[in-house]
Image (spheres, rainbow, N blue to C red):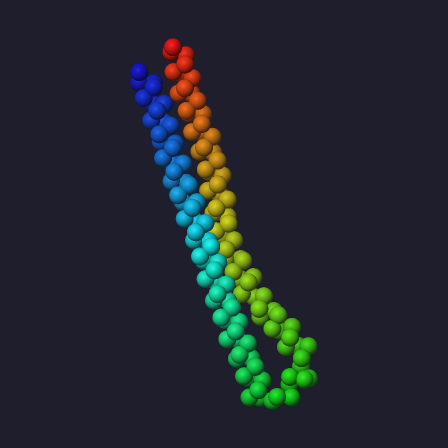
Length: 128
């Protein structure tokens, strides 16, 4: 009889750990998306502000620069737009690493739980 209780407790403990891992995984996924959205919104707002500051500075200095420096400032605008997206991608990478680690842990716990339940069922069948 004590062996049955030990196996049940073991599977219950594994099941509890599995629930914790799944809850953490769900929270990380939600945090990743909200963080990504916030960073992209901030990046867009920063780009619009930088764009307006850039054109304001050019207009205040000299309006002739628009024609002469067009190849330079168009490439600068493209780079300025890509910078927030790249920064967001690098910062979101930390969430991706944590999510992959938790998914590996979850798969391992799920396998352990299945083995514990099968061991318990096997013991019940062999006792009959």
